Every structure is written in C-alpha cells, then in structure tokens.
Image (tube, rainbow, N blue to C red; front, side, top):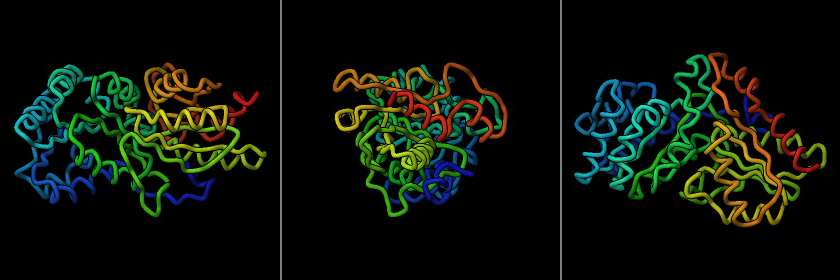
Amino acid sequence: MYYGEISGLKLGPATRDAFGDALKELGAKHPELVVVDADVGNSTRTEPFMKAYPERSFNVGIAESNMVSVAGGLASCGKIAVCSTFATFLLSNAYDQLRMSVAFPKLNVKFVGSHAGISIGEDGPSQMGIEDIALACALPGVKVIVPSDAVSMAAATAAILAEHGPMYLRTGRGKTATLYPNGCDFKIGKSIQLRDGSDVTIIANGIMVAAAMDAATELAKNGVSARVIDMHTVKPIDEEAIAKAARETGRIVIVEEHLMFGGLGSVVATAVGRTVPVPLAYVNIGDCFAESGDPQGLLDKYGLTPAAIVNAVKSVMG
C-alpha cells in the first residue's frame, strides 16, 4: 500500500530524484547556475549535475555552514547558487549562515533540504527534518516550497531558478504517487485544487497530498464531499484559495509531515484567522521526535495516514 493507491494514483519517483533530474537538465538553460553540496550528492541527487558540469560544482565536505557561506558568496557574484544537503543538517546546523549570508542580503540562493520528514525511516531522528518548514518560514523574505510529487517537483525546480531571491525547497526520500500525470501548472504562491468538495477542505503538501486524496475517496463513500488543495507553497501562502475554501466549505483540515508548530498548519491558521474564520483540525507529527523504523510503520504510529485525516474531518464536522 502507498498513499494515493486508494484514489487510483500510480506510484512514481521520489521527489529528490525528480529534483536531481530537473537540475541537470536546467543546467544547460542556466549557464550561471552553480551547485554546492555537503558531500551527500548521491543522496540529495545533485550528483548528476555535478558530473555533467564539474566546473560549476563544489563539494565542500561535511560542513553545512561553510556550504551556505560559499553559496552566498557565489550568488553575490551573480550566480544562481543551489546548495543542498539533508534538511535537518541544512536548517539546524547552518541557520546563522542562512540568516546572515543569504536571507539578510536577499541573495539568489536556493537551499534544498532532502530526506525531510519521518518517512525517511530507519535513518532515525538525527536525520529527520521535522522542523525545517518552521525554521525556513522564520527567515524574512525566504520563500518556502514543498512539492507533492515528481512532476510538481520538476516544475518547482524550474520555477525557483527562474525567479530571483532566496528560497527553500523540500525534497523527500521515498517514492510518491503521481498526482499530475498530465503535467503541472506550477506557480510559486498559487496552490492547486486537485479535487472539488462542498463539505470540508483538506489542505496538504508533500507526501500527505496523496494521503489526502485517499481520505477524500474514503469520505465520499460515506457521503462527505471533501475538497483537496495541494498547498505546495507555504510562504507566501495562497491566502485567496484558503479564504475561498473557508467560505465555500466552512471547515478546513491541514495535513503535513512536520511538527505541529510553525509549519503549514500554523501558516494556514493565521490566514484563516485573518480572512474567514472557520473550524480547523490538524494532522501532523505533534510535538515530539520520532524514532528509527520502517517508513510506513512510523507514519502509522505518528498518525500521518488517510484514516487519521478522515477522523480529523469527522472532528470538524461535529
């Protein structure tokens, strides 16, 4: 079983693979593009670009803070700098450099966090980026993007390179369901409605979008009409789509593979409170670290499942 199977979606590549393939392809379009990695290019999938363009690639070793500073320096010389490592190493280890060498000077650095969430499985809590969205959102002027499948990841990679400014892109380790088999009209800051509904709206990103589609399929069997929105951009949030969903469905459930504080749920709640207040429910990791284990087993244990989404919907419907 994989998320998306219940709703009839086919399993596709991991978003990190799609990022790596797109990055290499876009290297020809953007001669000013350079890549900096912290000795994990095989895992982050920057390796294909680095092999194709060795003169535009820099491996700084296991030194994430140094990596960000190097990327900032390259960007200050007019380059589009992509720096990538595991999400937790990037956002936790190199936060001061992200703040002062990238965000404060508003440099054109795209920092990419791989192996995010608890679905990386056996690598354990030291490797799991579960607070990365909150940390990235707290950096002034930084856009934060969490694509849901390989197709949208490829489109997102092209989009961040085409737009100037600092951005954080989150990628995942495991294979994901293909939500956009016919292509994706991806625009930074504009969500995508995957399914219409009139009783409740489920807002999700990353791998949880496919889980939301499964939950909507199950809810429909019991006469509940659920709208599903892929909120791939957490910052700037698509406030217009959120307000529209609140007005038209009257209830919202927010689903994310992240801690309960500071992520998509917090950002959507702020938008709802500012526009059209409605009952909200949340599906997330909670306020805890996970552990080492089978990826699906961890998702089950920490309540990141279609069944948990269904229960959250029931809670807001009364």
